[in-house]
Image (tube, rainbow, N blue to C red; front, side, top):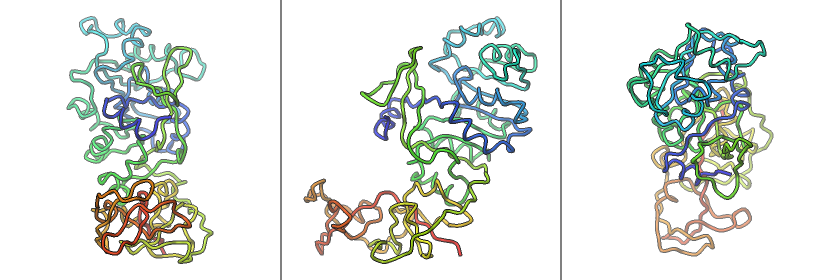
Length: 390
């Protein structure tokens, strides 16, 4: 199974091109149906012959009332050659546009007709779509990158962007969507919540988590040359590779009804159960289910709390790291190893995060030792600081 280390390796090697499964797209998109009517939908990280985002919107073009569907493919897409050969694309493109395989192109769909009446759009239907005078396939002059001037011009004309952008470029991708004031539904890693730019959008209620993926992992198809580890992958009968990725989330700025459902609270606050941070005036809550119903001060909750976050019930105060919240103390600490022994290395404020007193009944080993007093402290995983609304 692909974890954070796998994603970092993929990012470093620029092999973070994951193809989202159609079932995952269908489950999420049903919560936004009303948003697509008469809109231009842009899938700007998608080879239409491989992308299930394109397939979903092509199949549901009429049902959703979409005005136009546009998809762009970047230079070097690993499936372009194979799929183009299947669809005899050189018969579709004007003869003067013949070029080597793996070139960037754009598909615009303004009309969808189910040729065989089976209710689905398959390769045969897609080929017809491209031959339909109301639809168009054309080569791009640039490399097809979402940041290229050509693709930015397409973006300006779009209403909604739906895709799975490269995880390594998530910040850049979101920044572009914000710059051009676009609605979006995109996939990213849950740890993106801790990026300064991303968290600022979430705090200001300009972006939030999608509906359907709140835990576990999801399977993605990967390019044929993707490096596979010893476990957590499969290869289907056609030789296509799939991996399972942890911590996947939908990110969006399009509202849906379920987002405004109150989180059920049942626990009562006690100082014994909810420890206080040493460097910030807030209590620590280890699980979303443990948010106390009778506490109205600031609480530090796991970043996965945002899966259940209702902006009508809570407000986001800050991210529990240096630069986002103002620490009340500034202690120099020795970093301890995994056995609790000193390393001779020092840090300030637990590497710039929230921390609390070491509790031998709850914690296996301490993470830090106060250089001045010798007190032991436990580190806290990334926390979002929240407060109940009255």
